[in-house]
Amino acid sequence: MGWLAGGVVTLVVLHLLLHGFSAWFDRMPIAVGRWLDMNSESSVATWYNIMLLGLVAALAALAAIASAEPRTRLAWGTLAVLVMLLSIDEKVQIHEQLPDLLGMTRGDMVTHEWVIPGTIIAGLGGVVLLYLFQALERPVRRGLLVAGLVYAAGAIAVEAVTGLATRTLALDHPARAAFPVWEALEESLEMVGCILALGMIVDYLLRTGVLIVRPPETETRTPGNAVGAFYR
Image (cartoon, rainbow, N blue to C red; front, side, top):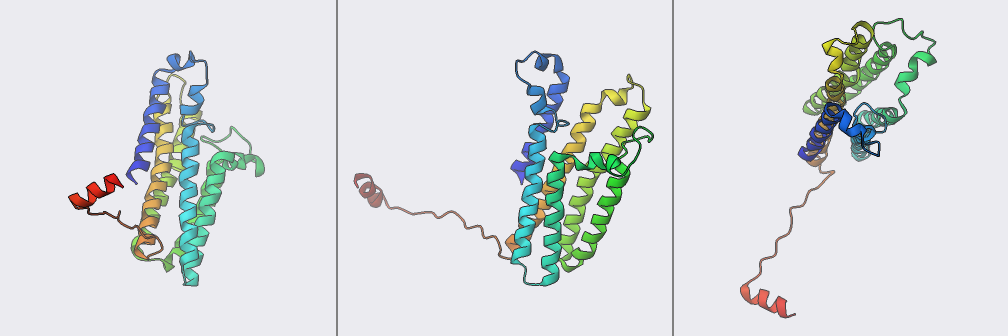
């Protein structure tokens, strides 16, 4: 999973460089800023997060298909469905439309209006998963719980804090000037949560024999064989 984490670090560095040298990027003839801004829905970071969520959903679905125990199959299958919905939401941004869908008035709260219904929905999903995860091994259950908490810290907690800063702080406040850092923290926590979940699921699939990693075959040649192979 190290190379996936390296991708997160690269995206964070590019995001901070974009905001640190925004004047230079603005002079470029193409919209590089849109690609590198982790807060943009059209950025590489958004699609990277979608890919990570998709991988988690796919491997959870594989674990469900390979499970013989119905309760275990249900736990993995439910995780796969919920994570796939998160992957879709990452691009479609359904959560940001929750206030309109629920008839909430925008601008009256001290943070983003979607945080309250979004937290309730996420909490209900978490309760369901915690109940179903009782069928899984304790290390797997704990690992997925940690991954979910890290993801929620970025997707909900940091979003709520940045919304609070936007609504209550003056434009020249240092905390608002640090928004690019908050945005990088939010997105990177979501990605790290996905990577932790991926590592836990891959380890489970390897231990249960669903995934098999074969060591590379090595062929030992004698000098004579090597010469013969050269002339053949």
